Each structure stands twice: as structure tokens, then as C-alpha cells.
Image 1 (cartoon, rainbow over the protein chains, first blue to last red):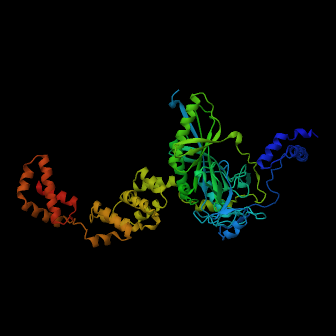
Image 2: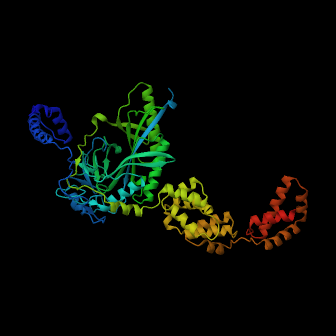
Length: 103
Length: 484
């Protein structure tokens, strides 16, 4: 087994945490760096298998082409939907101001 | 170096909303302009426990596009989650396709140039975000309001190769693409309603070089006019920067229509890391030979082929054919009118369609499909038979379009029918000339200028006598004969 510290760096953990919008304390980053390294080690043992000639599997089910006919159905009641949201205004979901443009 | 030494290189990403009845992964209605959040359900709201099921027609439409754009259809394609945090998708990811799209490697011919198409993949559209306060500026807004009616509407993202060499060619590519998508009936391609949206990747390079310069992606191009202006501006900006010794930074830029320039958005360093992974809730799509054969059998004539056919069959100009084919329903209308012709030529039909009919449609916003092509055919016949003049026909057509009346009925009601019978008119000409013998003498002895004047006077007298209903061509011929 290789050195766990090389599996993932603190900087990478911080980056992934930012992408997932998680605010981690330095202690948490330390702990997660070690835990994620263990998980990656496990994945690495799978990587060690010879998979030449095995097609990539996007899905475990032996199924393709599960379709729905193009038939519209009524949606949910708007009042009910918006009642479940933290805030609503003018028939829309109200969210905090957005920084930056849509991706 | 001068500006001539630089070449513009453009690749376009065109997002097309497919005109299915329901959304891509749920049964909510796919409609534009509904009351906010009235077409939403647990799937498109991303509620826990809900599962997406793929709309069969969206797949069929993607396969139609594959046929029209000569795209290959790989045996298997899969959906992937594109992860990002933005309130326009309530799930915090957009279901799209990544490394296994439904179609790849095609092309579209534009004025003789072959523009490569890298891929066209299926994905879901996002919701609409309204920024409130701060004068509509995102950064100064107080809060945002979101409508998820559009979230989950099927989109096909059509990505071109960087094969486009000018703003004008980019516009022509989009026009041809729109006409094609319209013909195969997969989208209404209305840019003003956001059914077709464009991002442009623009770079410049020294003319004659094969390499690619650093590109910038311009977003927010909502019209063909913006597309042209934004590409022109962006290419100039990059050339100026390079000539001043600055490096181009790969970044997303936004077209600011008011100020007529592109402004920097995210740079690559802040670019999102989408962490795509295969969507576990959807099984792969494997288009069968039956599905593809069905699409091939039902594919309508494509615009380029239709233009060629109309130009050859009707003897019209390329430009005429282009207008007919590019306007939804207009070529169908013209073809039905031509089929109903009892007199006159297809070219005359096309002239009326391009001028009066198109002006009427633009004015009213109506679709050609609500007009009666047989009425136009009758009008063309009346002009060809000399029953009415072209000038009279304009008024008659106007009334026919507005009131949905047959031209022949209008002509009768207004008492417009021209007198074209040569025998009848010859008698009138003889009588008028006899009455104005002096003028006839002056005509015969006069110079060109005098002749023109006298002839005009005599024509006026003739029309007065005939209450304006004499066929001018026949009268002119008779005047030539009788004046000698």
C-alpha cells in the first residue's frame, strides 16, 4: 500500500468541500483528508484488477431504453408547492441573492 | 500588422428547446409563457424519492436531428449529472450527457462551406431566475425569484467544430440550422422566446496559420444581430490585445447589448468543476434499428433540397427560395397556391408572397397556415387574364387577406373588372381620337417630348371614358396602331 498522504492533499479536500458548499474547520479538513485517503485506497485496490476488455459500466442494470410516452400530466398545486419552500414571492421561489451568473 | 492579417475562428454551441408536449424526464407540460411554477412536479423540483423517466419523443427528435445533420448515432449513450450550485436547478445538478452523447460527428453545409458538428446531446433546461432590486443587476440584487416551469424542458445542445470563419458565416450557419430544425419539426426555434440560444467560442489567429488561438466563450446572444455584433467586437478586441502584446485569457464573456461590447465573466481559474458522473437513476439509451428506420422514413424534405427543387421547378431566384423556406409555413403556402393556379406563373405567386403576403404576416403576426392559398392563386389568375391590373390586384389581395374573401368576389363587388376585349376597346379609342383630332395632329407633328405629353392626355381621356377599367396594355397597343 502506498502512503495515504499522497492519495489526496489537504488542498484537494478544501477544493472539494468548496464545490460542495461545505464549511470545514482545519481539524475537519485533517480528519477528512485521512478518511478520504482510506476510501481512495480501497478504490485503488479495484483499480489494480486487470480490466482490459471489460467495457465501462455506466449502470448495473441489464436494461436500456426505458421510456415514457410524451403525454403531459397536470403538475402539482402551486400553493402547496410554494408552501413547502422556505420563502416565496409572486408565485415564485424566493432565494437569497445570487452571486455571479448561471454556469 | 493590420487587421487583414488576422482570421476569426468561431465555434457555436446552439441550445434548442425541443417542442415535445411534456418535459424530458416528467409529465409536466412543456409550454412557454405559463403562470410561474404551474408546470412543476416532484421530478422537476428534485423532491426526494422522485425518479426521472425519459421522454420517448425527445429521443426520436434527437434521432431526427441526427439524420438531418449527418450525425453518427453511437450504439449506447448515457446521461450524466453536471453538478453545480445555482438556484436555477433545484436538484443542484443538471441532467445532461457528457462522454457518451446520443449523436456525434456530423456536418451542415452553409453556402457551399461544410461546417463540422462535434456532437448534439440531450439535456434538461434550467429554471428562470429573476433578480430583484439593484436595477436588475445580478451583483446588486436584493434577492432572486425562481420559476421552474422551464426546468426539465428537453434541450438539444448542438456543438459545432471551430470551422466558422466570420460573424456573417456564423449567422448563416444559425439560419441554416434553424431552417433545418424547423423543417424536421423538432423545435419552434424562436430566439425571442429562448427556444434557441447561442454561445459563441471566438478566437483569432494570424491569417494562413493552422493553429487555434486562445478562445473566449460569449454567452447571452439572444438574436442573430447580437451574434454578429458580438463576434465582430470580440475578434477586434482580441486582435487589439494581441497587437498590444497582451495574452488572451480563456474566459467566459457576456454580450452587453446596450454598450455594444463583451464583458469578462468567469475566468478559467474560477471555472466550475462540474464533477460529471453517470446518472444512476436513468438507464442507457440504445437506439434500435427500428427507431432509426422510423425516423428515416418520416423525415421531411430538408431546406437545402427544397430550395433546389423550388428554384429548378419555378425558375425563382435562390434568394426567393431562401425566404420561402426560412419562414415557417411560407413555402407550404406558396406550394399550395402554385398547385391551385389556373393562370399565371409560380414566379408571380412567389412575388406576391414575398411582398404583400409577407408584409401582411409581419404586420399581424399570423402564421401562413391560416391563409387560404387558393385565394392567392385566383388573384394571380385574374391578373394573368387581364381582368385586373397589378395595381388593382394589390388592393384586392389586401382585402382578400384581411377579410378572407375570394378575389373574384371583391373584383365583382367593387366593379373593378378591366375591359381587355380589343374589339370593344378599339371602338372607344377610335371615338376618343375622333373627338380630339387637334391633339392627334399635334401628336403626329410633334417631337418626342410633345408626343409623350399628347399621348398621356389621350390615355387620360380613354381612362375617363372607361372609368379606369381599360386594360392599359391593350390600350397602349391600340394607340400605337391607330396613331400610326
